[in-house]
Length: 226
Image (cartoon, rainbow, N blue to C red; front, side, top):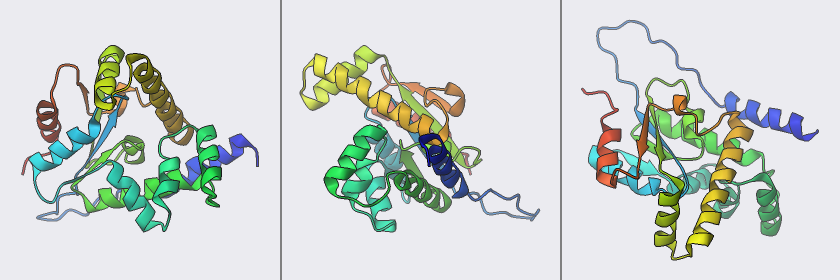
């Protein structure tokens, strides 16, 4: 199987995990669809902090899943967290190298399918905030899903990354660009979309002009009122 055919199989497998939403029959009172939020982000933006702040603002039982999503995928599909992490929004060539180093026999193309399955399970349960991992495209078309994109200029993101990690500006710039490139390749490879397309989102926030609290309040406002 050549690379193009293999990629087609993976995209088909990810789409096949979807369960189309059915129109419920008309009833006097219907249960509200479980609400879910996805947060996409450019490198250098602390989307995990925004997701956590939004969950706190919305209150129990809302939960944010950033790195926690990796643990969920590993637990549900009986995989090592290290193996899931090695395939987490990374470039294919880097993944294959990492997987070889881990001695894993799990095909690299299986991991994105498992991640998508876990994202859909969390969305079905509701009260979940999914950070990254193509959640906006896994749940595309779901009326109860609200998609957010966090952006900022590259100089701002480089400064933020350098401050958070302690590396030089030059190293921060190199890393920010690499992470953005890896995430874009991941989304294009598995969903055939560009993560920077504003039409994929209900809300785009420029974090250069907002703090975490302001962003979380704007995101929470997306949810329907009772």
